[in-house]
Image (cartoon, rainbow, N blue to C red):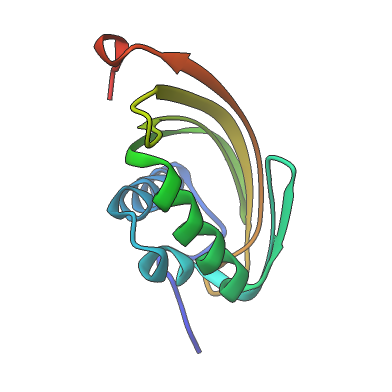
Length: 136
């Protein structure tokens, strides 16, 4: 059976660890690595897209990082309880034309008993910024 430590129920230390692990994985920009943190039948809402299963997650992330260049992410634990974690995040990236953006959002995560994320609901807004205004 696949497991992704730490396992729920989460305490402050393990919730912080889970958030840091997610940040590190997403900053790798490796869709294969990232999708292994999710259940085979994971359910996502990302902005206006609905994504189901690891294969769709991998395809989504591949496309994301082909258009969101030099992506850099910072996540922060907002709250946790039992097998759920809420985070806020921001990330910066630029498009092919060189326009930089800072994207802000919130995520709600639900994990299975093996520490794999089975649900991820993300609300995200983008702000065009100048390269000089980058923070990450």
